[in-house]
Amino acid sequence: MSLPSSTPALLSLNERLQDVTHALSAATTVHGVFEVLLTSALEAVDAMTGAVLLVNAAGDRLELAQSRGYVPGVPTIWKDGPLDGTVPAGDALLQQKALFFEHQEALMAAYPDLEQRVGAPPPVATAVLPMFESWKSLGLIVLDFREPHHFTQEERFFLRTLSTQCGIALGRARLMADLQGQVEQRTQQLQQQKAEVESRNRALEAVAQLSRALRVEADRYTLIGRAQQSLSELLSPGVFTFFELEGEQWCLKAQVGQFQDPTVQRRMDAGLPQATPALRLPFESRQPLYQQADTLETETALESVQDVHAAATLPLLVDGVSVGCFRVALFVQRRWTPIDQMVLETILHGLGLAIDRAEQAKRLRAQRDALAAANEELEAFAYSVSHDLRTPVRHVTSFAQLLRRNLGDRLDEKSARYLGVMDQAAGRMTTLIDAILGLSRTSQQPLHLGIVDLGAIVASVRDVLEPEVVGRQVNWTVGPLPLVMADPGLLSQVMENLISNALKYTAPRDPAHLEIWAEESPYDWRMFVRDNGVGFDTRYTHKLFGVFQRLHRQEEFEGNGVGLANVRRVIMRHGGTVSAEGMLDQGATFSFTLPKA
Image (cartoon, rainbow, N blue to C red; front, side, top):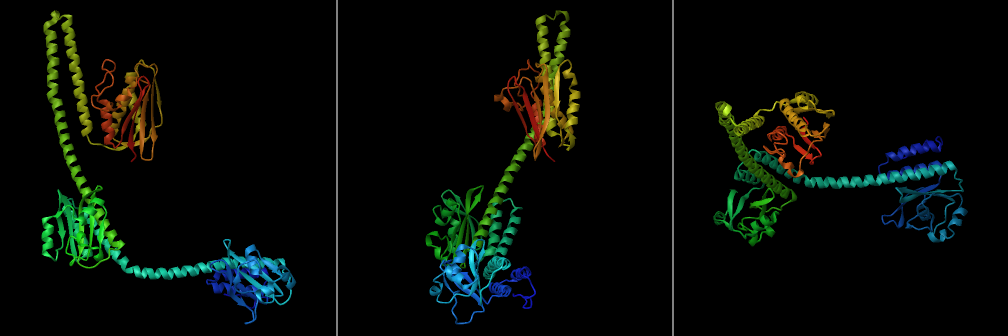
């Protein structure tokens, strides 16, 4: 692209620079950049001739790329040659600055042997303008004049700016040319890959369909048969077999397709030795074995090498363990491409996951059935406790009262003490029965989840427990508490158990300190109840939340050993966790988490 020929006498250098910038931005080829460059430079400063020299790929020579105004056959100093500082062109690039020679004497003074070196007379006046892109030397622009020329500051600024912009435009044009070449090359590659892409799409669709089918099956060999059928539709004609190692023999467990040689089928049905390389190697290494016609050797071929022209054996891994070998034997020649290998390995990987999932589901069903049976036994036990155990306890209590009444004044002190121990034991048994029933009901009753104000629950529990702090000095510190998703009744039981325990085990303290607060994480809330009570031995922390597990004697602190077990069951049903920290005589901190809604 060149500038309009009517503009030279009308435009200032600044205006011309704007037009040149616009023209260079529109130039898309190296030749187009040179056209804009030489036209604008010659017209702007009234130069007689101009040329562009470029640095070669090796970076050690200058080569004439384009010129304007020179007489054909007349030698000039601007021509191909080594890139060194003995000539103006090389010197300007090495110094990385523009050179201006306003008359011939100045040029000859700078380079005394220039004419002898290049075999051509020097120009009357000249400007040598190097071009760079990101500090890389691209080449240079030279402008020659018929007579001495004074380069004004405006001209020097114009020419330097022009060379800078040309360097950028030249780099961009080269990049576009490279990109165009890459696009053409890539287009050819894409055309060559079109068939492979279509093959991959078919393969991926087969994998997707198989994945959907595998999700609904549970039997191992049904899953394997599905995978074999899918591959037979994708890779046929051939035979698809699956072997498992039983003792010292490979046993055929599943097959799709028929062998052309009946003797091969009979041999497969009879079983293969454990040392069979085509099965043993993939099984032990857990890596696939791919064989083309040229690698199907007799010792690694399970089938007739006259019939089978390509084969692949892949180990079937379930939870990382080899459980068998999947064999593909094709009756046509095939090179196992990366796409083929990807499809086979993806299908085998998905098959292993499906089998693992099915077996895990089977185990979970067994565990669920066992849990259901245990729950039924627990309900039966609770019923027995409720009805069968209460009767003998009532009998003990009733007969003790009858005996006390029958003896009347004859009841001595020792007998009275015995009867008192019986009453206390019966009362203790009644308390334990009630605790067990409460624990059972907590486990069985349905959750009624809703938004619960934990602060309101703590305030309500404090009101309920107010009689326990009468006559004591208890300092409460209750931080801001959140709204949580929970069953309000069960959460009240949790907080009542934790706060009641804190009050109980701070009985020897004056004053007692109770601190209740909450901490937030991205996934849940953790609630804390801390006291300055008697604490506990950290060696027995694991016993705290067990049924009937107590770390203090009944004579020291009353309790039935069920309250914290109840807390744990409630929180676990909500999907949370419980924990405790403490030391003897230094208090304790109990905490639990509740997932965010």
